[in-house]
Each structure stands twice: as C-alpha cells, then as structure tokens.
Image (tube, rainbow over all chains, first blue to last red; front, side, top):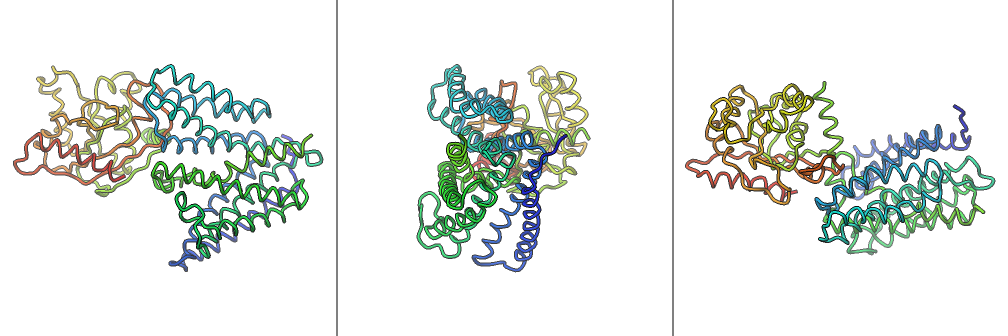
Length: 316
Length: 204
C-alpha cells in the first residue's frame, strides 16, 4: 500500500491528540472539584464534547491512512445510527415497513458508494432525485393513504438530513482544488473545528452571560449573547486557521461565519424536530450512545453549503 | 458462548435500552409478563436481563413457531431453554401437554418465567385483553413475584408477517411487581395486570 500522507495533517493530529489529552485531564480534574453552579454545567457539556472529539480524532487518523474507503464507511455508519434515532422518534406506520427497509439498507450504502467512487453527478442527485421518486412509489403500492404525505415526507427528510447532508463532510475530501491537491482532509478539519468551537462557545456564553432568549419557543436556553459570542469567536478561530486552508484570511473569515451561522440554524432545526416529538434530547430516550442526532445538527446544515461554495468558487 | 452471541445480536438489531423503574434485577423467582408484538419479544426480555439472572429464566414460547426448523429448535431448547407450549385446544386435555402444567412444573424446578398473557402477537397500538393463563398461574404459584414488562417498538422493528427487520431502537422496561389480592376475581386481576403494563408505557 502506498501511503500519501499530508505532512501538515500529521502535525495537526499530533497537536490534536495532545490538546485533547490535556483537555481531558483538566475537565476530569475539574469535574470532581466543581459540583455546583454554572461552571459545573459547562464542564459537563465540555466533557461530553471532548468524548466526541476523541472519536473524531480517531476518524481523522483512519482517514489519513486510507482516505476514501475509511471515511465512506465511517460516515455511512454515522448516518445509519443517526437515521436509526430519527426513525425511532418519527411516526411510522406498519405499512411503511418495506419502504423503510429500502431507506435503511439500500439507499444509504448506495449513496456512500457513489461517494467512494467519486461519481459526483450521481452522489449529488441520488437521494434528492432517485430516492425521492422511488420511495413514495414503493410506498404507494401498499395502498395505505392514511397520512400519506406526512409519512413519505418524514422518510425523505430523514434521508436528506441523516444521510445526504451528513455525507457532504466526507465529500470534502473529494474536492480537487488546484494547488491544494491531496490536502483536502484539512478542509474537513477546518469545518469540524469551526463548527465545534461555535457549538461549545455558544453553550458557554449562554450559560455565563446569556440574558435575552433568541428562540424562546424552540430552544429556551439559546440566547442572543451566546449566539453572538459563539459566532464571533468561532469566526476568529476559523480566520486564524486560514494557514491550513487554500483560502485567504478574508475568505476564511467568510466561510467560518457561514459555517457558524448555518450550524446555528441546523441545531435549531433539530431542536424543533425533537420538540415536535416531545423529546428534549435524544439521549434521554436512547440511552447508551448519547444521542447522535444531538451532535450532527450543525454539521448537517454547514457541510453541504461549505462544500458547494468551495466547489463553485475554487474549482474551475 | 452462543447465548452471548445471541444477546449481542439482539442488542445490535433492536438497539435495546433497558430500564428498571419498578424493581431491581434480582435472583428472586419471578414471572415476567409482557405485551407481545413480535417473535423476538422473549429474546429481547431474556437479553435485557443481567447474565447471572438470565441463566435461570425460561421464556414460554409457542411450539408451532419455536419448535420448528433446526436453528430455531436448537436455540429455543439448548440455548434459551424455552418452555415450549402447544397452542391448539387438544393440548388442554392432555395432562403432560397442558401449558399451565408445563409452566408450573418449570416454576417448581425453581426457574423464573417470561410469559405473554395476550396469547398472540398484536399490532402494538394497544394491549389486548389477557388470557386467563396468568390468573391460573398466580393462583397455583403465588410465591413468585409477577413483574410487568413493557416492550416498546418491537412491533416496528419486526412486525407480524414480515420477513426482515428494520433497525429502529427498542426498549424494555420493568415495572412494579403485582400480587393477587384476596378474593380477587379473575376478570379484575387480569385487568389490573394489563393496566400495570399500560401504566409503564404512560410513564415513559
């Protein structure tokens, strides 16, 4: 096997590992000390994030070793688990069973297969066009018209959110930007860093200085202060990271701003879905693996936008 | 070992969450009774019990499904040690084949049981009326704890009449044990037992 490893990325991974190790030690130390008040909430939230960052770290390493196949399989697994949670909280009927079988076991693997083979044309339209037509056609055969529109929309939404949108994150690796060949893993690192920073800092600012609610009905904990703090800080972080991207400082700032903004609305959308179903966080109905739906909200909205803008402006 | 693999696969397929809201896992002799929505139901309860307890718990299953085929027969008799019962009417007259006698015998051998008092799989929208077997069992063997169990979403994972499953997340919840009251009528007891499962579903 020929390994083509981006030297930059090795440094980044080592840096990430050491940072995470330090962060883990500090938070586990603080967890024992700080038992009450706002800070304990923040530490708890941070701890949760750090756990998923370790997971991301491992993903990045696997991607470095074998780019395409590993990232496709890992994200297929992620999509699958997210779709599982999504369908659990959706209202499906007995008659949807066979359609759901297609939606679980046939469409996501095919979609990721197109990603694996870098067949961009098929990758970008398979779910919005082919699955969109096929699934209701399969469902209409059952002859059950009760809430037909809702049932089919739910399935299509699930595939769009949990499979199609999520898959744009690994799709970043297929981008061939002139002068930046073989380095596109760093784009994924860039978007992951910016959206995670924004998520965490929004929570921190919400808890510490948050006063004015920004979306009272959807997510009462989110505040204007948190939103502004998170967006500004994450944009700053993204701007400073322009060195590892093919963008200039200004472009980096623009992209970071877009990622944080769309990520914010992604999280809000998922909060609304859960509220609609009467669930506060999907971890409470699904014990054990913490609720993946709670994690992918920001990525879901920011990854496709980021991908298409980069593709539009940087690839001729 | 095979039992372990079986449990692993059941957990993987059904994404099981186990909750104990009315009692704690215990070695006490118990009869777990649950709503019945799929063929996997008893496997699901059996899997969600801790390993030490599981060894001593025998599910009561229909002979016409779990006694057929080499694999099913092997799993139900050797691994899960199910109490297989005949569902046809003629078995009631035969003393050896009578389902109730079989269950009581298993209890006398100090096993715990898993039973589905609805008698047959339902669509999962509501819990059907219980068959009288549960009442006769508690009359004959009142020293066991009767624990209501609510199985959620299994009807969506593997519904009646389908060949394959879809990986929706299921859960198993154990409620508060119920006992037969003095002079309680059969109808009242069966109703109360059914309600105890409904109550669990409302608490979730």
